Length: 118
Length: 132
Length: 251
Image (cartoon, rainbow over the protein chains, first blue to last red):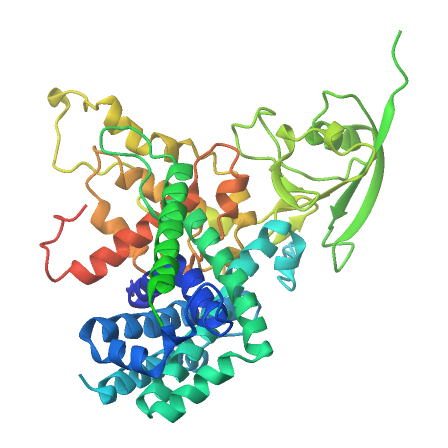
C-alpha cells in the first residue's frame, strides 16, 4: 500500500492554521485597520525605522517569516482540497500551482528578509 | 443476463444541499483570504527590502479606503477562522485519557478560543504601548 | 372512539431499473398517528398502497443498521425518525446518498462490505495464547479506550454524510476507519502496525477533510470524525518519526 506524503502538507497546514487562529485577528486589526487609521495605536508603529529594525533582528525575522510562510502553507492546502470539493479535477498541475505558490512565497519572504540584513 | 442497473447519483452542487455543508465550505473558503493577507504582508516585506521609499509606498497604499475596507472583511474572516479552527480541533485529539476519563470537546474549544483572545489582546496592547 | 386519522404525504424516490432510466418521485397519502416512524409509513405503503415499494429493514429499534435512508435530505434510520416531526409538511424519502441505487430505497453496499473485510476487523493476539491461559483481563479504563467505537451498527449513515466518500469512493470512509480504530485501541490486539499501513495511505485517513458531518448523523454516538482525525495526528507523527523511533514504540 502506497504511503501518502500528505502528512508534510497537513503539518504545515496545521502549524499555519494554529498560528493564524491565535494571532490572525490581531495582526489584521493592527496592520490593516489600527495603524492606517491611527486608531488606538501610534501611526509610527509600522514606520520604516521600526519595522526595518524589527526585520533586522533574528526574532523579528523569525516572526515575519513564520507569519508569511505558514499562513500561505495553511491557505494553499485548504484551497487545493476545496478545488476537489467543488468538482474541479485536481491533478498534479493544481497541486504544483497551490503548493508551488506557497513555496514561492516562502522563498521570496526568506530572500527579502536575508537581503534586509542583520 | 442480470436485470440490475445500479443508478449513480450526481455530486453536483452537493454542498448547497445542506446548511452543514455550507458552513463547511465557508470554513474552507477562509483559506483564500488567509493567503490574500499573507500576500499583503509579503509585498510589505519585499518593499521593506527595497528601501524606505518603496516601503512607505506600501504603507500609503494600506491607508486607502479600499485597503481598510478589505482589512475589515479580512478581520471578520480571520475571526471566523479562529472560531471554526478551535471548534474542529477536539476531533484531531484522542478524547479518552489512558485512565478512562474523557476530555470534553467544549473545554478544548473554550481553552483554544481563550488562548486566542489572550494572544490577540496582548498583541493589541503591546502595539498600543509602542510610543511614536 | 377512534379520532379521525390524519394523513401525511410521503414522497419516495422510486427507481425500477426495468421500468425507468432515472429515479422518479412518487407521492403517497399515508394515514398516521403520533407514534408512527417513517419506517412504519413505508410499511403502510407496501402493505396497502403499493406492494412494489422496496426497502430494507429488520429490527425496528435502531440496532440492526438496515433501514438507513435520506429523510428530507438528511441521513437517518427510518425506524428512529417519526412522521409527526414533518407534519403537516411532506416527507421526502430517498435511498442513502453516495451509494448506487439498486431499486427504490435499496442501495448497493458491496463497496462498504468489501472495505469492512479489509481492515483486519478482529482481535489478533499480541503473542500466541493457549486456552489454559484463560480469558483476557481488562480494566474499565482499558475498555473505555475502544468501547465507544465498538458501538457501530454498520448503518452507513456516515457514508451518506461524507462528501469525500461521495466524491471518491476509494476513500475507506468514516465508519470503517472508526472500526479500525476500535481494534487499534483494544489492549488485547496486536495488529495495529498492519492496520496503520492502510491508515497512512491516501485512501486511509488522508482523504478526510474534517467535514465532521459523519459524527453528527451517527445514531450510536461512535464519533467517526474523531477516530479518523486523531489518526491523522498519529499517522503524521509516524511519518516524521518512523526513522527515529524503533517500530512499535510510538503508540
